[in-house]
Amino acid sequence: MKAQSLQDIQVVTRRRPKTTTYLRAVPHTAFFPHNGQVEIRTTFAEAAEKAKGKEGLCPCHRLPWAAHYVLKETSGSMVAHPTPPPMKEWEKRLTSVAEAFERLALVLAERK
Image 1 (cartoon, rainbow, N blue to C red):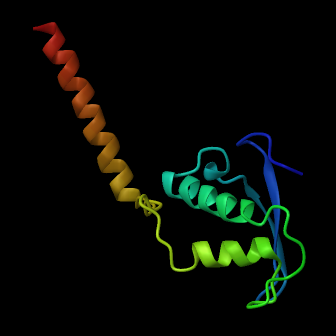
Image 2 (tube, one colour; image 1 turned 90 degrees about the vertical axis):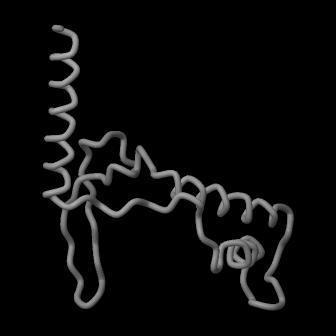
């Protein structure tokens, strides 16, 4: 079932090294993807679109044509806007403190 909101729960099954099943919250990027994720999804869709109307397997890779085009277009490609690394907890706190000081400075400037 497709996630409807960020409050939904997913059942995840991992098969290696041993089968494990657990629950998790829907990832934030399922609804708000990063720019790099949008770029690679668009590239993927455009590559698969080239196979429209073709039947059978490509002779070089013995793959369906859509998979062949996606492999050729996306292998080794880099996106212009990669996903940013997650912030560490201390970075989040420093950022929130800096934002609070900026808001305080604006309030004090308005009072003068």
